[in-house]
Amino acid sequence: MAGFIKVWTEDNHYIAEIPSLHIVDQAESISELKKNLKEAVELTVESLVKDDLGLKGKKAKDAIDLLSKPLVASLEILSQKNGRAVFDTAKA
Image (tube, rainbow, N blue to C red; front, side, top):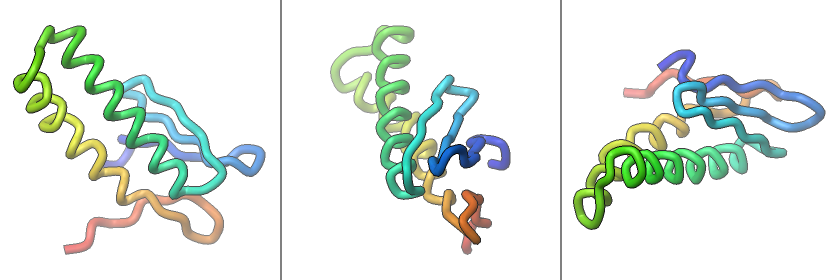
């Protein structure tokens, strides 16, 4: 999962980029950043499924859930240590 989300701080804001989805967002806290990224991932996946794949109804909903859940879950490893955004190792 390393490299999936690039995170840095700039002018007292956390900034994150998910290059594979062309998403960039910022926030004043890690928790706010996670919330913003979750929404951006869900909207991006929804757009891809409906516009690019042309799926509708239950098929679209199932595809959106299937694709967005692991991406959103990966945001949970984002945390803060010594004032810097970091990725925690997965806990068994």
